[in-house]
Amino acid sequence: MTTPHLLVHDHTDNVGVVVVEGLTSGTKMLCVVTHDNSSFSLTAGADVPIGHKIALSDIKSGDTAIKYGEDIGKFIADVAKGAHVHTHNLKTKRW
Image (cartoon, rainbow, N blue to C red; front, side, top):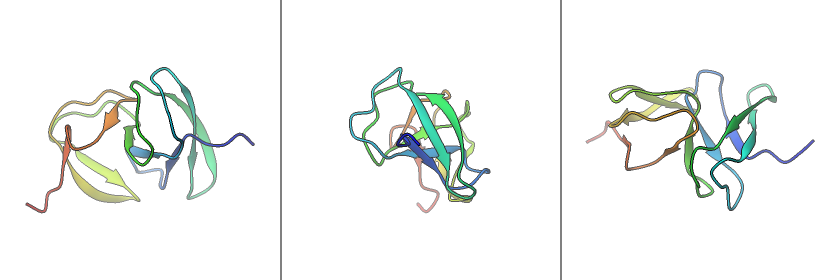
């Protein structure tokens, strides 16, 4: 098996986490769902640092971010499938 580029924890997640250094825009990523070890492919829409998130589908501003099957925040901008998800387009709901 090839090393995955992106890990997704649960099938209900709408973001995954980059697990390789130097991920560049246009890379066809191997994405693995850790819940059942299933996989799918997705193209990176931007250069994304290791540990940062990528949108698994097109997401609208105001939508909830789901990671680990849990609510981790609210999108404050529209995000395209494959795009970088971080503090510029996602905020916690805690404050």
